[in-house]
Amino acid sequence: MEEFRAFYGMALPVWEGEKGPRPVMIEDVPGLVSRLRRVPDHSRRLYLLMDGMRWDLWERIREGPIWAHCPTDTATQLSRFERALDDLDTDGREGSLLWKLSGIDEKVHSEKGPLSHLSGNIISYLEIEWLHRLRRLSPGTLLILFADHGFVENPAFDPSAKYENPRYIHGKDSPFEVIVPWAWVMRV
Image (cartoon, rainbow, N blue to C red):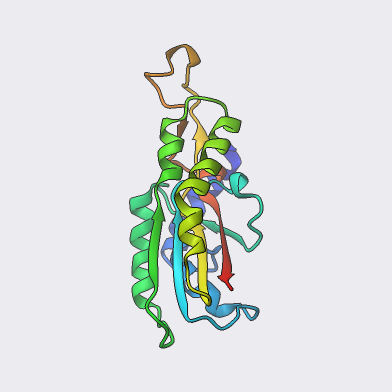
């Protein structure tokens, strides 16, 4: 983990200065779909920001990772995404929309149990709060799902004092906070 932090700490300023090649980052999300050949024609594009969705919690996403900027918080990531979205040409399609799924991050900040409890609560949140909305989307809607940052277990967490300290935190530079998922799906 320390090797990753050292690497990331040295590489991020270079990437942000656009002085060389870099991994895919949040500001690249709006343009990712236009670079893929297998994306079908679509009438609408919708971006679904999964606030705080860590890579290993969304294992079925296979498009690939994006990297978060430091600090790994929503405000930093969203400002970069919105600037990139403003620069994107929508190719004459209906305007893009951004939906933010805040409940994932809320679960991360409030959960005091183990990761298995957190995962179950996140899945329940998605089923209860979002499944019905996604089912109502019109055919031809392209969904681009992506996360803004992940999280780690707080090393200072003490189960005997669980109401005083959070169990899960984010904002730093670990791989669990920096490397997050993205994918696209089509409503048919």
